[in-house]
Every structure is written in structure tokens, then in C-alpha cells.
Image (cartoon, rainbow, N blue to C red; front, side, top):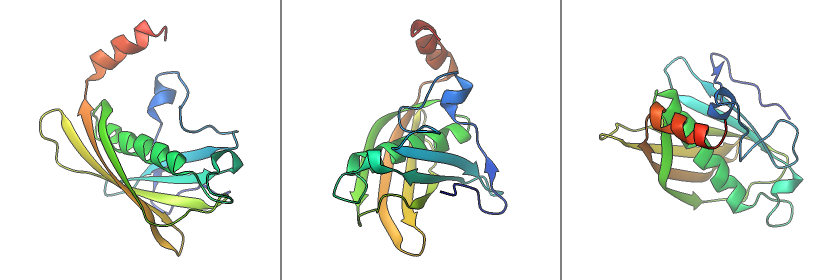
Length: 157
């Protein structure tokens, strides 16, 4: 599986690594979901992901919950890339086509203009040459670095 970036993309450090924790969604050595995040020269955020046998729903295909979890995490990463520390308030996923296991997909992310602490984000997941498999919109709330830091301290991190 090749999760490498397109030309001009630079890797982003996932928020859980900077906090010294693990991702709920992905791991580097698991059989469920593997993901890498990138920014392009225009400041847009992208993800490349692979779904293994541990993410199976319909036979041979990715479970919708695994797709939703990836899109939730990816939209949070896109908001983080703009300097905001967010949590999800609402996400909505539209499934358009089944995603076969073992394929690498690309997620394009767009952060809309924030209104105060509310940060709207869109995600589009595509299979190479197959078009859109699912789309998501999310409303994230900026909780600020201090508040997130206190939550991490209480959790013993």
C-alpha cells in the first residue's frame, strides 16, 4: 500500500502524536485503517488512507463506520492545520459507493470560514479513477489549546 503524497504535498504531524497519544482511528501496523495527512502549497489538507481486513463490513468492502471514523478524524486534522484545537459537534456522511478493502483512497478536505468557535469542514473521499465514494460535512467547535491541555492532564498525559 502506498500512502505517499502527491508532488508538492508536505506531511502533517497528527495531533495525537504531538500530544503523545495514539489515534483512535488508525495505526501504522494494524489491519484496520492506516492514514497519512498532508498539506499542499495552497494550504489545503489531504489524507491518504488504506482499509485492511479489520475494517470489513459488507464482504470484501469497508464498513461504513470505518469510513465515518476516518472522515471525522480527517476533518479534525484539517481544522487543526488552520491552528484551531477542535472537537466534533456534528458530522454527516453521505455514502455513494462501496469501497473495496485493500485500496488506497484520497480524502480532500476544506475548512470553511469559521463563525466564532464554530468551524465547518467538508471532506470528499475518492478512489483512484472511480470518483467520489463518500462525502462528509462536519461542524467542529474550537475548544482552545488550554482547555484541551487540561483535559490531557486529567487523563494523565
